[in-house]
Length: 298
Image (cartoon, rainbow, N blue to C red; front, side, top):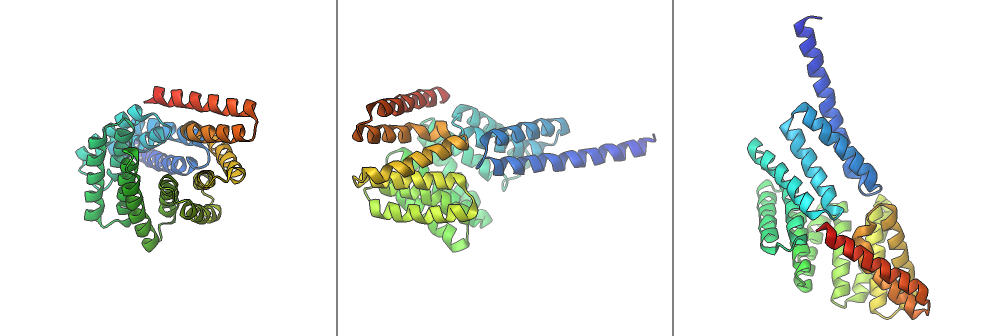
């Protein structure tokens, strides 16, 4: 085989490898919402392929996506480590536009590790990038992330304002996915603020959108928010079914370790109210177990 032909075949193989790595990343991004184990498999394969191809842009993307999934799964220190590697690559490449999502992971990881000042700093960088690029999705995301940090600090009214701003941007620009994710957070905040009727109305709207778009995780969050709103209004019989269904969905899509702590706690409370002390005990023990596991993940 001639050297020229050999080089052309090698280049073609690399191009195919590049496209495969990108396709695996897209599959992982979509799979997270319905099957987190598949998402992790696709990411690991894409990351290994990116290393073999020695493509810094592809590696930065793969590290960024892996960090995002690891962070959502609750492994915040590992997410921060992976995202820091991704950010270093973006900076070396001079690609400021692409590292917005890496800043998001760094901000969330810092927040979950109680590094509040660092989290706010990352949010400010996100806002600056979004405004410079004129990107409404990123701008909505920066307000969403600001709301998350404020929520973590216990500033629920300020968090609700930030989520509302994010939701308004999403609505005005037709960002349906952002509308679902931001709407669920705003519904939770309205529950925290005692605005139960408003929270229920918003949860119903999110449920309709989630069913149309097939967004299983949005449906689970909306059901949880509705259950908590009913619980806040003292409607215990109405609170149980949506909370139980949300728990079932979270478990089905592999996000149970993240959300079971509170939901199991509330289901235990409801079981005790119904006089089923054995079921209450089981829920509360499981809630405690999830809580211990979450602390170990930090």
